[in-house]
Image (spheres, rainbow, N blue to C red):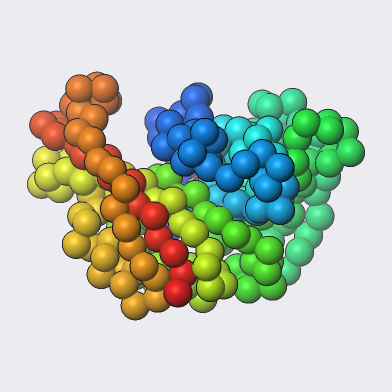
Length: 230
Ligand SMILES: C[S@@+](CC[C@H](N)C(=O)[O-])C[C@H]1O[C@@H](n2cnc3c(N)ncnc32)[C@H](O)[C@@H]1O
């Protein structure tokens, strides 16, 4: 999936992947089961291929600093505008940086979103990134881009950084992606060299996903992993 594919989807309003509610795994592992509220302001969560995900708002409301990357200018502007957040905008390297007005709302931590290509990000932006939330990001990419994606993560993240990864697995002959089916075996293969991989939970969610049933799927398993940079 090249960037033009996604820009066209944003322009045509084909954003069925966008969710109105916070991701339940994020809410569980970074909410009640996560770091204590007083520890959160020291943590910065990177959200790759972030779209206009409400998860970023939830994280910032919960005290985490947020750093997203997204290629679509429309998605980034929609994120700030739909959530009624004042934002500033500046050019940085090949990216445009959007950030909320941190002084404006004392109950909201900083949110920075780089508008540009994930694959051109540099390590200097990752010095204080402690965590990554990957929902619909790895699985948005076709198989021939996924190793490049995992290798780029390894390049960007410093030792100890934790990734919460949510994948989908289904019979790829029943439906073309995105989202693509990514098996446990593939996740282990993609990350094994530079990360430890722990499977946290999995669930067949097909009965809650009418959109995917309509596209021909008979089973759709969501799996959550904790992946730590070695
Ligand atoms: C399936 S959507 C998921 C968005 C978000 N993670 C969510 O949960 O709503 C994938 C997103 O990645 C963006 N994207 C795709 N390739 C990208 C790249 N190379 N660099 C930055 N963003 C990219 C697309 O514009 C799209 O918004």
